[in-house]
Image 1: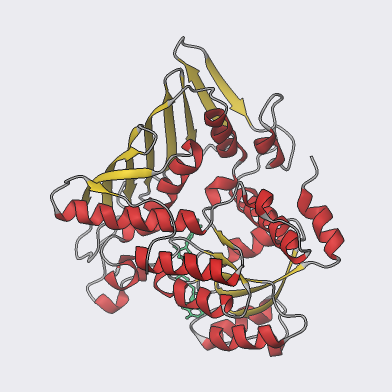
Image 2: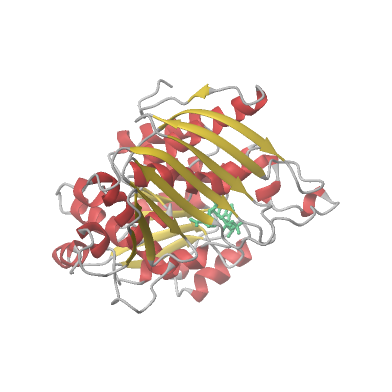
Length: 400
Ligand SMILES: NC(=O)c1ccc[n+]([C@@H]2O[C@H](COP(=O)([O-])OP(=O)(O)OC[C@H]3O[C@@H](n4cnc5c(N)ncnc54)[C@H](O)[C@@H]3O)[C@@H](O)[C@H]2O)c1
């Protein structure tokens, strides 16, 4: 199945020009972004301020063959200089720690540059709402890289819910409970602790910001429903850790479903640990990130089907996200690449003066970032009140 991005880029007559902030050789996720946006040949990486450490920023840019005059050590200067160029970047990829996302995104939006932003979108709900307004005011697009939404079988699960195959959704069980490295003791010297486990990055609820955001986004993506109430238990298991590293959220969705979202860094022995089960009145689906090619569908009558990516009869949305034929495993990088490919179609349509909305339909964006940050804050309030139910505000047009 050919993807619309290819013909839109052909009509545009050039690849999209990307810049990166963060994601340098000293980062976890930067290399994954570079692999993902290169898969389809729709983008060129032409500029970057890729590390807080100038030497690493320069070395990473050099290894990616960026021109010296487009190698930056300051993102604000990069935004300014790129905006002045005839061949300036179309979009910036922000792959820095969460407390920096808002200011970096604002710097580029102010110059009319589109944004690809890592999750959590911002540090607080107020910041997320402010960014939503900036995006709207600038008339630019924002992709939030909840990469798991790019898996074909996640999109298939979404379609099954949409077309009523499960009946009305009643129960949602999601978890992102990892154990790898997260269980360890924190170093005695606070300066040696990773930002992920320090209050400065996200406040105390880092586990919700880092992994809880993905599981909440996945649950809402598949069910199409917003969380409207939450009761939370947050705790710290690792010694000397200054933030929560395990969280249980009991949630109510706006469509009447209820569910539980478990986020953890201390599930010893778990590797990645992202999974989702959705139960309707007639059937349930089950998906695990570590076995992403299949989706289990079980009906109330006991019929069990293991749906495989690219098998006949799947929904158009999941078939469109499939790259290689049945039997050849795809996986995480191609799921991530699906986000970049869909976003390329939206960016190209925007550049051509056409409506990008159809190409954004399967993608997480600024409204999803706002919804998750609001849930996180409501969960913290609930925890502070011993798990009392807290409402989660809906809609992105909140007052300043
Ligand atoms: N989508 C996913 O699956 C996924 C996976 C891992 C991390 N993340 C997210 O990606 C973001 C980065 O995470 P990470 O694990 O790569 O962090 P990291 O600490 O490993 O890397 C952060 C990078 O940003 C750079 N940086 C920091 N401040 C900067 C600034 N002001 N200007 C330029 N560069 C700056 C650092 O030098 C480094 O290159 C976080 O928001 C994290 O939650 C997402």
